Image (cartoon, rainbow, N blue to C red; front, side):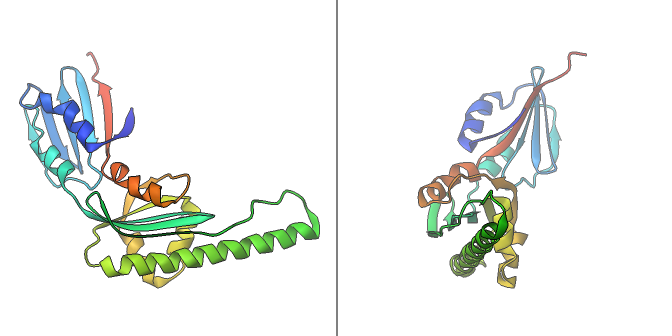
Amino acid sequence: MSRFVGRENIRKRLAGLEGERGRTVYGGGAARIEHGGETVVVRPPFGIDHEAEYDAVRLEPLFTALAEDHVVGALLVRLGGYAVGVFEGDRLAASKVGSRFVKGRHKKGGRSANRFRRRREGQERELINEAAGVAAAVLEPWRERIEFVALGGHRPAVDDVLDAGPQLTWIAERALPRFFTVAEPRQRVLERLPYDLYSAELVDDEADDD
């Protein structure tokens, strides 16, 4: 079973196994720990360069990778709002959020539906263009320092923002593999994002008996 777990919770769960009999394999950006008939794979959110195999449980390289702080940009967009920020570790160092009304979908047909669709498309374009401008304004001053960018919200809306101008190409190039699902891109949501940013993917499964 795969799930995302906070880095401190992973440390608490595994710390007592350090030095125990088993096997630990580092490679491909993850740590695979085999102990007592159970296999646990931990993939730190920002990867891990260490590659080695040990005939025991060795967790120091994993814990070191999990403890590292990074400078991370964030772009969260849904039709109706956006949030852009820069994190230094857990600290939100720069941010701006905004919202624009976008009409819901029209179920009836005819001319009224066409007018409604054109109005909605216009509202969507306004939101996308505004979000793209804010993303450039907030993130560009940090461009040299930002190591990764977290994308989240509604994927098509985020893609539209990133396609809105060539000045945003570098943001897409530094995007983390994980897409962060958020219901509303608000300031409070942005402020809580570091927990998810630093959560690692954990897969645990009991080893076969044979």
